[in-house]
Structures are given as structure tokens and as C-alpha cells.
Length: 257
Image (cartoon, rainbow, N blue to C red; front, side, top):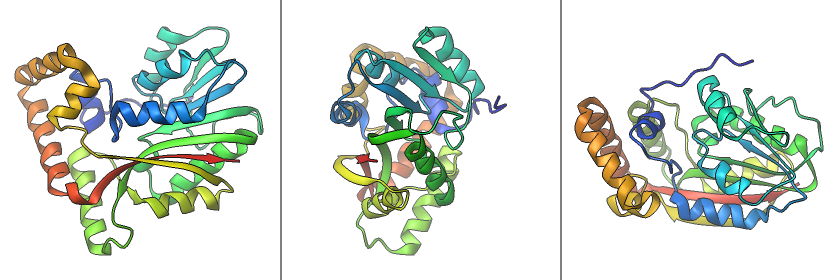
């Protein structure tokens, strides 16, 4: 059992505590496109890496897969989700996505969003290889991650963006270019099937309204007014996103075993 807990100073948990549900870099629209591309059905055994607050889990469960397992490292988040969705066919496992403990070749579809970005490159590959291991031949792995552009981005700019994101988000954020993401998947043995993109507008007012709806957006705004420290952190994150906006992108990639 993992002992990892939620670090409330990390950017994604601050946003979650303010009431934000959609915490993916490409927003609700790119998540829905990824889920649709995976074509999950009632015969599928589905695994989600790092379900977090459970937004994508709800989309997956609405398709009534044969089984669903969420692999969640944070014990607090795992406990919250376990209470909400646990049943005979729906489980939350408090474990690392790099070591799920699941049987090889037992899963039809694996999905993970906004979690590989927060890993060192060698750790990214470990998680991707675990997805490959647990998937059946012909199974699909879908990821939705923060990316960089253009492909020939200067190394110093890339390093500065990663440093700025790590300081602001309080996580080791290491986004990659589209080619770099695809190469990691290929290195693990996958074949790329589809690639979708979206601007990284996580904290843009129009995106927040589109993702959250008017009432939840108002709730988030009200919570920001009541929590000055959280507001300061969110504004700093938005400043960093805006500063590097022309280099940031969101990728949703589906790969086949």
C-alpha cells in the first residue's frame, strides 16, 4: 500500500480544492475526444492511471465497461474515489502506475491523463511499459498530456519552461514535444493510432467556463476571493502559462499494442 498523500500546495490539488473538476491541459473537449477514440464498450476491462478527482472515471463508467480499475498513488484520493465508485466490477487500487500488480495481458483499454507529464523521462517510460504489459494484444492505451512545440524547440527554452512549471506547479512538470511523446510510446512497443491536439488554456476564462459551466465557475471565483493564498498561487500559475503560451500544447494520443 502506498503512503503517498495529497500535497495541498501542488497546483492541481489547489485547483481541485477550489472546486475545479477538469484538470486536464486540453480541457474537457480533448478528454472526451480521447475517451470516444478508445471506443470503450461493455466487454472491455478498463484501467485508468491516476484518476485523481474522478472526472474521467465518470465518463468511462458511463460506458458501462465490464470492469474498471483506477490506479491511484495518492492514498487520500484513492480513498475518496473508493467510497464513490466501488462495486464488484469497479475498484480503486492504491498503487503506482509503474507497478500495478495486475496480470499481464488482462486489460483491453488503459487511459492516463496529465500524469506522465509530472514524471522524469525514465519514469514516463516505466509507466508506459507497464501499460503495455497489462494490455491484451490489440489493446489500446490513451494518454492526454502537456506538450511542447515546435519539434525543434531550443533546448534552453525547453529547460526554462520545465523549470518555470516545476516551480509554479510544485511538481516536476516535464512536458515533451509530440514526436518525443510518440517515441516513448514506440520504444515501449506501441504503434501510434491517432493524435489529437488542443491549446493549453487550462486557466483561460473562456476555457474554465466551457469546462466547468457558469455555476461552478462562479463557485471557483468565490472560493478564490475567500482564499487569498490560493488566489496568489493560481495567478502565478496563469502568469507562467501565459508567458510560455506559444510553446505549450496539449496532446491526446491513442496507441495500440
